[in-house]
Length: 127
Image 1 (spheres, rainbow, N blue to C red):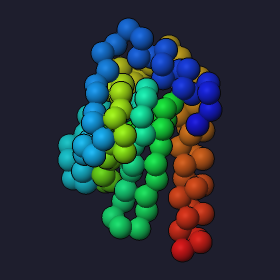
Image 2: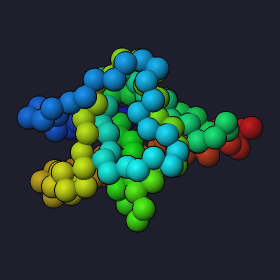
Image 3: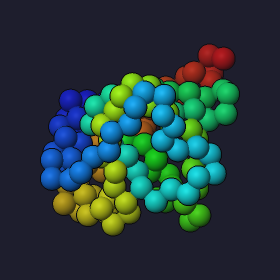
């Protein structure tokens, strides 16, 4: 995550309500229906897939986008607030609008997701 990604999430959250999640609260679980993604304005979130894969992400990162592109809108991982968090929620129309109005948002999200995927691959490779 770069400072530019944090600036973009903060800019997107300026005119929209955010949600506040307390440390330890589960945001979503595998199998849950998902029709929104989340941008982290403040705090950290742990994402887990089973007992093997786990990552902690912070301000500027987005998560849950998979449910917007999956035809059945199902969650595959568990997202838990590691600390108290302020999150920006975006449903599919809001996400598409943000992509249209702020193309840099899409590039930043892809960059962040690619870095996170690389880190997960390294974690798996290193056992």
